Image (cartoon, rainbow, N blue to C red):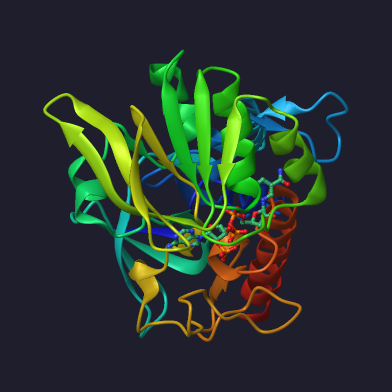
Length: 308
Ligand code: NDP
């Protein structure tokens, strides 16, 4: 059975930064890209707040750069999904795509977080037929049409602004009487003429037919319901951590995020480290994820050295 020193699970900024550091430390890291190669940044538009890019950079471009850097330094980047990990003994036995087994001396988990949905039956029915959690991926299909975005945070504002550049009318459906987003984002939304912010509104149902979404039934704060006509319904209501793989195996907090020893990347299982959004319910920024990937690689390197 193949035995590797450092296995990195996930290919966002945390995973690739961990790979860059582990490769430079001659640990021959193997990185499995997982379900969403490149992670969440591949679903965002322009990144303006990652230091080093004075003009900003597209999410996909930055992830391609990080991947290329990890490869150049010798990381072994592989396609595949880790479907099981045995944490009870070391080296850890890891299953890939439910078939191949490998052994890993140390594991760095960088599986990130995924978009949340409202949980409506109609939302599920029209997923991929007008319902989307990624404006950057799908906005193009709704050019010159009317769409809605649900949420009041930075993601919702960013997506609404992006969609407004393509679509005719964008409704921003916000359940509170205010936006939670940063002031700069709020200003962008309020200064975009074709975004209509619907405060104190909730979605009752996504409406549609054989061809996909045709509208949404909304409920106002006073209980009154009415329909809007839209062809795209975008969710931007936050994320949940991708920790199903390690549930019951490493300690998670009440929201499901991996708990790490403060100031480190060490999980409750010796030899398993965590980096990026999968352990960060607070900041969830690319630069923070990259920094924590670096910490995890250094922690893994020191821990492996201590085992000799
Ligand atoms: P947030 O958790 O910040 O916001 C989620 C939004 O969705 C809130 O307005 C929330 O409402 C609303 N919401 C949650 N559940 C429901 C529901 N069931 N029905 C209706 N509305 C709901 O998530 P974001 O993804 O926006 O942001 C996550 C983090 O990433 C934040 O720290 C943010 O600042 C950061 N970020 C930064 C960006 C940047 O700097 N360029 C871009 C994007 C994100 P309520 O307010 O009522 O709870």
